[in-house]
Image (cartoon, rainbow over all chains, first blue to last red):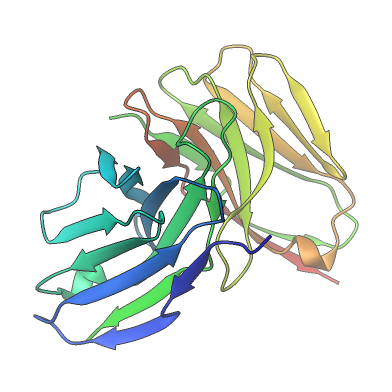
Length: 115
Length: 110
């Protein structure tokens, strides 16, 4: 069974630009969560999508948005990039979303660098 | 908000040594998860704990769910070079989001 895939793996953008990252979950998984990982803040939850609906959201500004398609693939978008948005963006999929027994499987991440 | 405090922040040990790390919270958690992240990869689930007092092993790894439900411990016995990485504890917040500790970076000297 293929794992979670994320594209692109690396991205370099300049301040003010926008970026779209893509995540393909494990086949059969309907929940996709996004996390931002930085050395200073660690792993922080961005949002979770289930059946094309945002089900949960972290404490990030509105510049961070996402969506999920009918095939469960998800994209996240960051508009008006800032230097502080440089991070590893991780996507995780699970069968139905976080519960006591629903394991999240992470992709390798997209490394975003904002210059 | 809820936070997980993980310690130590980093460890540099000799191959063959045992390792202990822990995670504490000011609030109660009903589930404790331990992940490992290799360089350039996403975190991988090592052990999941669902009951206070539970002790679970996965090979050389052993994790315990603290009786108070406010802490958890991970032990690695007889460390080997491939144990190198960042170890995270995690648990579900009261809003359902998964929150992570800051991580313990482990380096193993052959």
